[in-house]
Amino acid sequence: MADTSSRTDASTDGDTDPRDLGSFYNLYSVIRGRLEPGFPWDILPSERGQVMLAGASDSSDRSKDKLDQKTLRRLAQNREAARKSRLRKKAYVQQLENSRLKLTQLEQELQRARQQGVFISSSGDQAHSTGGNGALAFDAEYSRWLEEKNRQMNELRSALNAHAGDTELRTIVDGVMAHYEELFRIKSNAAKNDVFHILSGMWKTPAERCFLWLGGFRSSELLKLLANQLEPMTERQVLGINSLQQTSQQAEDALSQGMESLQQSLAETLSSGTLGSCSSDNVASYMGQMAMAMGQLGTLEGFIRQVHLECYGTTQSGCVVYRE
Image 1: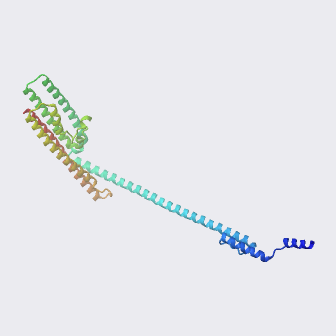
Image 2 (image 1 turned 30 degrees about the vertical axis):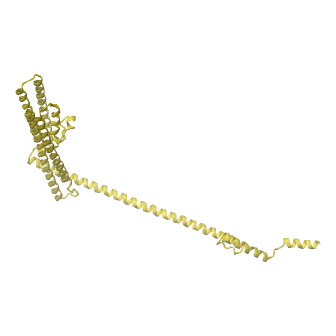
Image 3 (image 1 turned 45 degrees about the vertical axis):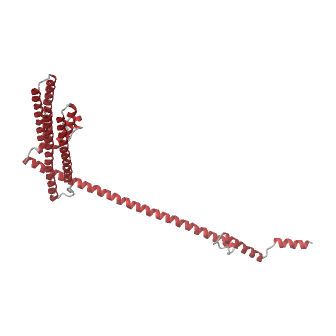
């Protein structure tokens, strides 16, 4: 019995049959192969560690390759962004340099134009070269005219309050009309020296500038105001005022359209020149354009005179209608 048990223990604790181990290992390899495809389970167990180390090394190399590729792409993107930034900076610097050169050219041409303008004014008509003095002279003359107008208005109010006769009132009204005719003459002369000063209306009060039209007032608006203040009127007077108001409105519309066209033509003349170079031909062309602009300024002065004539004619016609 002792021998039998000893043989049983020996068979249990001793070496296992190699065939059984091979069958078990083959079965285990098949199972693990299905679970982990691609792993060489058919190699010996003693070689598995080396294979696993080699696989880990390959995985680490692939990770490093991926990191290197990302780094290279990032560096390439940074280099491209830096190159574009340098190009933009270079273009901006070049644009600044071109602007500086153009500004220098404009200053030189402006200096030449000023010198030629001084020469022209010293050898030709002195009226246009003293525009500032002309504006000051007009302001002073208008101030004196305004004082006289206020005196005449006070005289007319006093005559009305005293119930003066028609002959005396007509004499005062004729004096007022002659005084307004003097204003139109003063404004026409001032427009020759500084037409823009007349158009701006800086010589009027802020309230009057709200109703300013081409350096004066609209006769049609004045007729509306008078029609409301001088009621009652006869039927003939009403018809005459309405006809005169319609005629004035048509004349004002025509003058406004002509003025708008003239301003547009003047702006196109001043902006059509190319001031890119400082050649003598370009300067001559520029001076020619300035001469055309000055000619159109003369046309502008003519418009102002027409406005004055229209206003004065409407005022006279209104007086005639009210006297009927």
